Structures are given as C-alpha cells and as structure tokens.
Length: 248
Image (cartoon, rainbow, N blue to C red; front, side, top):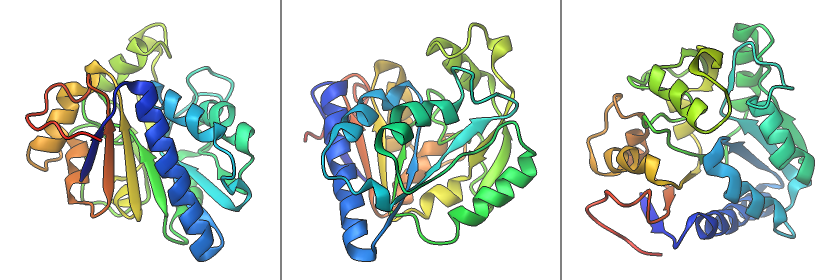
C-alpha cells in the first residue's frame, strides 16, 4: 500500500484527482474504455470537485459504478448516493454509462442486475473511502470477506448510522435507513487499482487500524493491505495516529 500525506484536504483531493485522471486515461489508451467505481460521502467532496474540473479526461469512454445505496431512499433525498453522484460527477462530466443502484427497487434484483454488469469485465480503478468505523463501502464490522457476490444487502451498524448524522445527511439517527445495498469487499478487491481518499481527524483511528493493525473483518478497510495496487491519500489530521509518517 502506498501512502501519501498531503498538506490539507484540498491538496489531497487534487493529488488523488490527478492520479485518477491518469488511471482513466491509461485505461482508455490501452483498451479503448475505462470502467471505474466511485465513492460518495463528505470525504470525497474535494476529490470529485478537482477531478471533474480537470481537462482532457476521456469521460465519453468511461463506465461508472457506485459502491452503495440506502434501501428505500428516493433519489430526491439529500442523502441519496444516486443524487450525490449525479450532482457531483455524472451530470458534470457526462460519462459513457452510469449504473445507478436503485434503492427503491427490488433489492435482490438490483444486486443481480447491476452485479451482472459490474462483473462483465475488470474494473480499472476504484475510488473508495474509509468510514469512521473502518467500513469499506457499507461493509460494516464484522465484514464478510468470503462472499464473492458483487453486491450485498447489508444492515448498517449504529456507528455507521451515527456518522451519517454527524456529516449532516440526516437530522437524527432514526432517520437513517437501517439497510443498504453495498458492493462486497471481494468485488472491490477485484479492481486493478484502488485509490482510497480519507481526510479528517475523525477518520484517524480507522486509518491507523486499517494501515497498521492486522487484517481482520473487525476492521473492514484493513483488507486493502492485501491489494497489490492501493494508494491511500491522507491529510495531517487523518494521518495523525500513524506511527510512520510517509510524505508525498
């Protein structure tokens, strides 16, 4: 795992965006198209802002999947990840294809339909974050490291739901849906390259456990230690508990 610690969250976003654009361009040059996975949440704001502002990214040749979506939440809700991605990525760059996870549809059918598209060819690059409880997508601890299903129906733990309230997506924890569709850990790891974007002090303990602790389902993002091409982008706050402090 490569670790870059940037001067602040905006610099983090710019560096990750430059690397993301390079990965997309390389894939299009090599294969005529790029298949990517996009994350959501407050941690991705600066990254997506920087990425969508870059010139010459070949978006018409890009196919986008997303990591997760709440069950039962309409796309008009401020916390909908479909809405998030349309507003912050899809409507700005007009990719060739975007596979939305319909949280209002039949969950099993959505998992099957989008999962079939997802596994039809390799993913070139995945953009992910790490939750306050070290979740990867909506795989809360203890995460299922064994299943090979591309998407799962998961139950969100209290820490995950509290994070959504803390970030301002919902007024109270009672308003946060208890279930969601999530890309599986196994499926995320099938990506050729993973860019993990994690700013903010509130993520520091999860980062430390994910980077310096054992690989365990109790720390879902620790599985990224096993991936051959993962880059972790941190700011000084999210890196503050690391024993080793790489720079770059």
